[in-house]
Amino acid sequence: MTGALRKALLDVLATRIHRGEFVLASGAIAPYYLDAREVTMTPWGARYAGRLFYEQAQRFRASAIAGPATAAVPLVVATMLAHPTAVQGAYIRLARRERGTGRCVEGNLARGSRVLMIDDVATSGGSLVNAARALLAERPDVTIAGFCALVDRGPRHRQPFKLVLPTGHSEYHELNAIFHVDEILERSDDDG
Image (tube, rainbow, N blue to C red; front, side):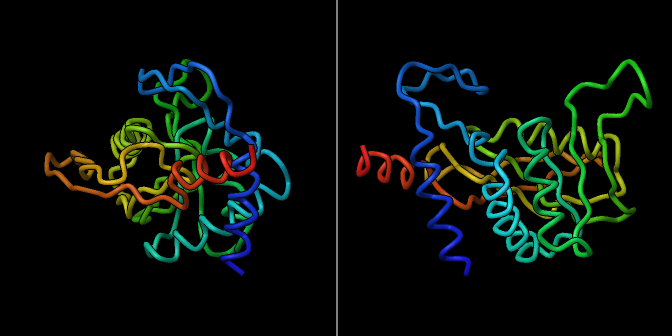
């Protein structure tokens, strides 16, 4: 089933490549843009991505998933719905709100949760690392189980992320991804 879900999602992601000149969140200029939200914000795209991220959560033995607002929000919800009793979820704002509770972390994370950080597309991984830092600053009682993007558009052999914990110690994490953008570009070129 996983292979079929992955292939179906790959086929549709390949149709969401936009050619031109685009500024990415990392500040880099790219000759293409992959708008994964055009897929993850559909009922079937969210369902497929949620199932694939749920498998990643199992692989990392994560009890919760979280990611940066807003791109990760549909992915967090879809993953929780893939197996409603298995994982909790939250999203992280990078800046505190001036109203309401003033929290950066919104959602349900039990004390001591092992959190898999997820995002739709990662280039440098900066959004994921910044979200993890904000999560740990507000919730030092949780641990980061790992990092996973739907699509990694960065180099295939990147250096691990350095994550400085509230205790001052550092952890290093690899970025895992369900797809690498090269697969999607290759499929897009085949279709186009």
